Every structure is written in structure tokens, then in C-alpha cells.
Length: 410
Image (tube, rainbow, N blue to C red; front, top):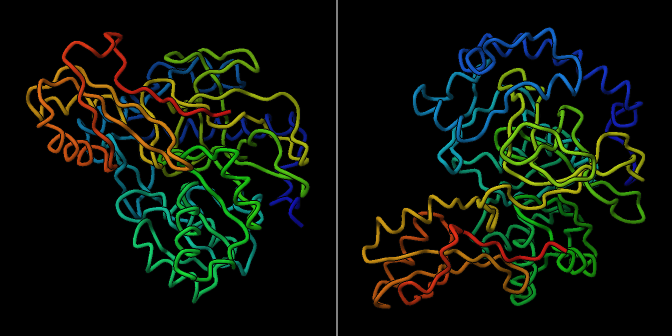
């Protein structure tokens, strides 16, 4: 049944859930401060006083910029790890993350189950396995459910189509628009990709038109919200008759929505920055500020799950944005002026071209001769190809904005 639950935790009384989580939090905090990074970050805090959302909100947030700074001073993980790593990863920043022992370290099995993945499914996993943890996050969850996984990674489309035609996967995981590329290429080549009946996507926005296009091909597509350092945060659910509004927060996460740049919770329904506390014994995260925007939805989900719901990913609290599943940060764009001489102001505009993300770099320069060098520098910095538009010196707005995300999320 599509609306079956992963376990009984998903339907427990909300008050019971809160009591359980804050009882666990006391133990997590005691465990976390055995690591020097957390001991310093939570110095002077009376851990025993953290017994509710109100008292949790008094703890300092941990920002990714803090992690970057601490990891630079105290490599490899800034003193925030409390367990032995079996793998180590690098994410843009660069920020490094560990994978600890256990069959589903990032807790993706629950979200995959909600998307209809079951034992015996063959999962075509197109998230990257090289250096970044994306591929491993979904690989672990799928295998924990008893699925077989094709570790496809991104790219090599022709080889992927051959594997799909031969192995007949029933499910796809990856960024939202790469599945469309695979299906379109399969149609052009006369290759069989009709075995795929369900999809689980993350790393970018799933636009309604794209979800609808997949539905016309008989593919149920669900999305989730996860990060490399926190693992699974929230995921979509359905009743069997359609996708429920918003996303249900994972059972091992305490999620807060705060005023961006602060640790102060906002009113229910207000848009703010997502802050998460994650029950992970090997790499605990306590009030990690994700930089992502969302809002809490009132009431339980129609699917019957009783956990907190959020509207899903609603953009970035800063100018950092995701393009084709990769974070692009304003400092990456600003540094292009050090690589290519003779540039003035720069502005990266992110849009949609059909059903795919696209980015255009507008650069003030006296000559178009810098276009090729700038295109190469942009790709080198972001790992994404973009279009270059040369603008006259002084013509770009003097408003401090380096990245402008002009995609519509309606």
C-alpha cells in the first residue's frame, strides 16, 4: 500500500513525540560536548536546562560558515565528530562531512518508503558518488529497504540508457530534471526506459509542470529535503490519491524556523530559515542553520503522519542558491574577477530553460574578448556550464546582489 507507514513512530501523538525527542536530546547534548568543537560551541550552557523548544531556542546556532572556519583551523572536521568515520566527503565550500557506521547513516530509508520504494525494487541512482555524499545517502537508504541499486551517478547518458534497458530498474533517484533527460534521450534512441514507475528526487526544486510530465508517463515522483551534514530533514508523502501538501519532518530531527541570520523562532506559518537538530551519535548537529527558507504548515498531514510539516524548500536565506543540484555561492562568483582581469560588477542570473536550470553570468567588461576565459572560469568554480553576457561598464545595478534567482516556485 502506498500510504503504509515505515513504523509506528510516524503516527504517534505529537506530545508523545516531543517528550521522546527532548528526553533523547539531553543524552545527545551530553554526548556531543565530549567533542572539543561542541564543547567550545556550547561553553557555558546548562545542558540540563534544555527540555523544550523554548529552551532549545536559547542555544546558539551553528552556521556552515562556522563549520568551514573550525575545519580550517582544526582539520578534518573541526572537532564536531563524536564517532569513527567509515567514509569522508567534500561538499562545496569546501566543507567536509563523515559517514559513520550503520546501514542507513543519513536516514533516507523512511523517506524512500513514503515515496513507495519497497523491497525488491531496482533503483537507478544518479546522484554523484565521487567525493560528495549524495549518491551514498540514497544508496544506503534504498539498500536498507531491501532494494538493489544501480550506482549510475550523473552523466554518461548513453551508458545509463543501456543499463536501464537491460536491468529494467523500477525506480529513479537523482535531481529532478535529469530523469527527463534520460527519458527524452531514450525516446530519441528507441531505448526502453518504461520500467521506471517511481522517482525520488532532491537537490533542486521539483516544478509542478515537471511532476505532471512524469505523471503522464506513468511515473510517481516525490521529493525530499536533505543536506550532506544533516542527512534527511523532510520528505513528501501521499495518500494514494495524490501528493500531500508540504513535507513531513523526519522522526530523528527537531526542526525550527527562525528569522534569517538569527536563532529566534518565527510564528507558525511565517517564512524563515530552517534550523535543525539531528539525532546522530557519530556526527551530532545541534541547531544547525541550513541557510534554506521554509515555513511550518499547521495541522497533521492528510496521509496520517503526525509529525511537523513544512512547506518544503522555498529558496535561500542568503544569495547562495542551488543550480542543477549544486550550491553556487556569491563568493565563488566574486572571485571570478581575480581569475579574469578587467571585469567590473558581476551578476549571476538563475532561470529555467524548459524543464532545466540555467544560469547566465552578466559581467561588466570593456571587451567581449573575455567571454571564453570567463565561461571556463565559471565552469571551473561552480562545476556548471553557464552563458556569458558582457555588459557595459557601470551598467549593472549597484545593489550588492551577486546572484539573482529568478526561477518561479509557484
